[in-house]
Image 1 (cartoon, helix red, strand yellow):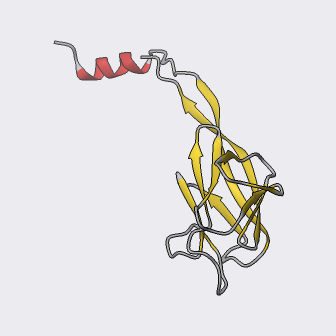
Image 2 (cartoon, one colour):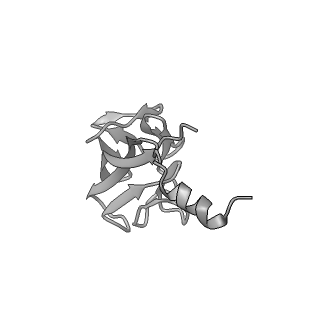
Length: 134
């Protein structure tokens, strides 16, 4: 039977190969309030679904007497976020064009909903991951 001390010494002298690191990016979305009344001036979008409205569960909280409970909805998808109007609510515009269906938002798009203008931005955030090759 081998001595435990000898085994420990042998393992310390071995070369250990670490898996290579791979740099990837994730995209983080932000809404900046350009004009209008909301509870914040900047919103970091982290969820799969973002609601714009005065409802207690809305991510972007509209303020004012006539603010709709739900004015628009943003949904995360592989390429970023889409925005869609809510039936029966006030007009939703992106870059001055009225929306009737869901569209993919692009960096710098201006969203106009219920008297509030929001600017949409996507930022790439670097992350390091270790590849497992075992």
